[in-house]
Image (cartoon, rainbow, N blue to C red; front, side):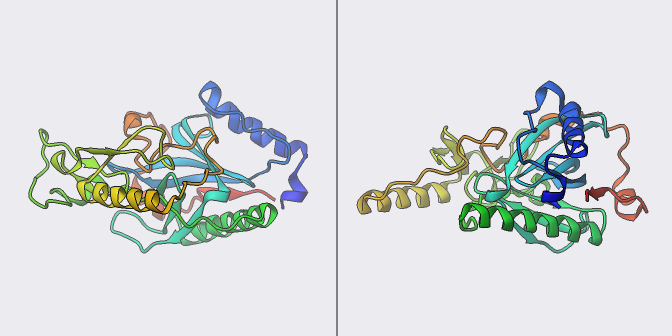
Length: 273
């Protein structure tokens, strides 16, 4: 499919249309050899609640963003190099069906498709692109993945001390190492994790002790952290947290209710040939 579409006018037009929808807020996407293979709306499990997101699958990157006006305007663009991606199929929950996790060393999150067929198509095309890229570059599949953030509503108490109850005055926080929902007292520490961010990040007390022990062990062994191949890739988020709480007020004019998303006869994803 990639060889068939590369350097074709229709592929250039499709990529230009995606760039146009993101506008000035997005990164340029047209590069030699890049092919847009598919696109569609998936539900992304965000920190506060599941939200619709537009996804575009290219032969080397996965791009997603918030929907302002479907097929006309998107924002909050994120770019994930496929070389860094591994996938994990997940069971259904009461809120989300046809789920799977997209895992990378910097960001991991859960998405769901409107139907089991669409999930199979997404996973099949993603795995084919990843396999092709790893073969081409000679790299091994990534083994280190950022922990996905546990949604706020999953717990009413701190997941570390199990004592503090969350309220409007007692905020929830997330440990950037384990993804647990924790209270302020259990997450006062910061730790520099270059794989996630150039700045020290909030971690829970337990993870802080573990990270200090690992650092001490590495220092004693004289080990040096290797450079990550994707460190300079633009658009990759510095943590595995929710990217979209700030876009809660997005005006999604053409988005159906959850029940309509899962029961509609409409296909929410399409793949190009």
